Image (cartoon, rainbow, N blue to C red; front, side):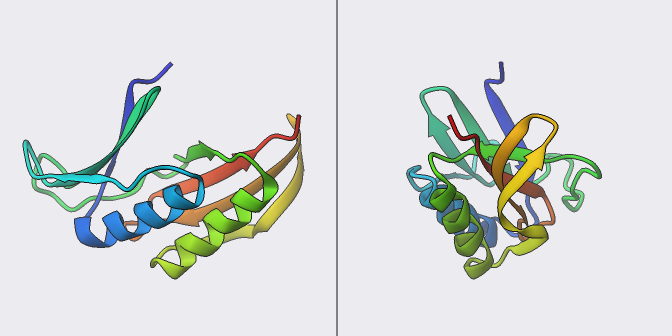
Length: 128
């Protein structure tokens, strides 16, 4: 459905460290820094891209109230690794601890974090 998602960052270096850690815990390659057309880090997969960039308008980055970006996790252990890596890399754990939840969509394993710029992200494992 999506080709890419971009998040604003006030400190690209801190965000690069954070996203390398959390996405690495999910099995993704480190991000590639690019300063054109604006400074940022890009994470590419065969199905899409995530950009963590400075805002084009030069104003400070801010997070979306009510917005969350979810990343697929291969196992419950990957969800926990995501959460631990994120906190170790400067993120903040939010909501309940990483682990199983009963949701309207069935049982899932979830972990929610705020990145260094306040963006809300999560890791999701849906048992088969």
